Image 1 (cartoon, helix red, strand yellow):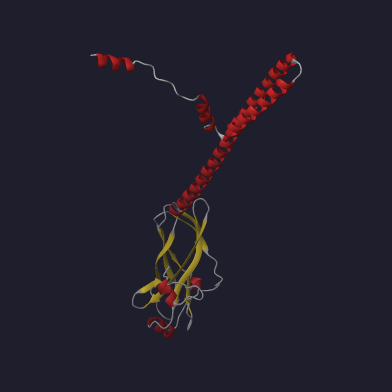
Image 2: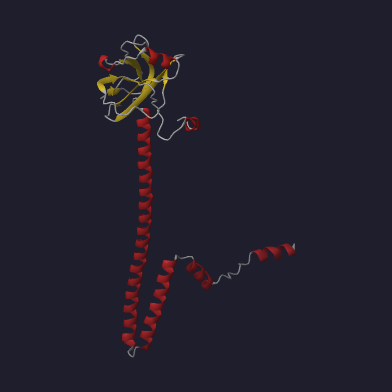
Length: 275
């Protein structure tokens, strides 16, 4: 029992407060931002200068008056400095926020441009040439007029569709690098809804007649008989898109797409890069 009373009495004794006020003030000072530290140090130096001048003043009454007035002016100056420091920090924060907002606006603009590009690629007319033939079949010694099938495979209608339909048939000539300027102007002003096909027949004035010898050489694959054309069409917003096509006749399978090579491109290049 006595030992218990002694333990209880020891726990009831107040603990000694060994905290150092100077150390706590130093810790608080080190936690201040660098700008407030400089303002605090400048204020202390100014206050020490005021105290030194007041102590050296010959008149006791003027000494206290001078010290009080200058200390008040110093406090006002420190308040202005602290306020300016706070405003400076707010200004820097606003500038950083402005830069962040500018970056967000730039990203938004780029997103809108990309969205518009994707929309233009998907929500637009896409006219392709799916088939080609000769009216009445390919035969010698009679006018030949091509029949070309166009289909709008896009999601919207096409307007102002203009295109040429021509035949390239010239002995000993290979049309690898295009057909040159034939002087033919794209004709028509067609409207082609999405998903609809359109058959265009070459004009009678553009009909081509081949002789029996050339026809035989075409059938043997020794000459080229190509139906080609070019033109343009517009979407509903008025944006224009070009179109160009070419079909070559093969005796064993009719007409097939004919790829026009770029200058300097060989068959080996075409096999390596079919697109």
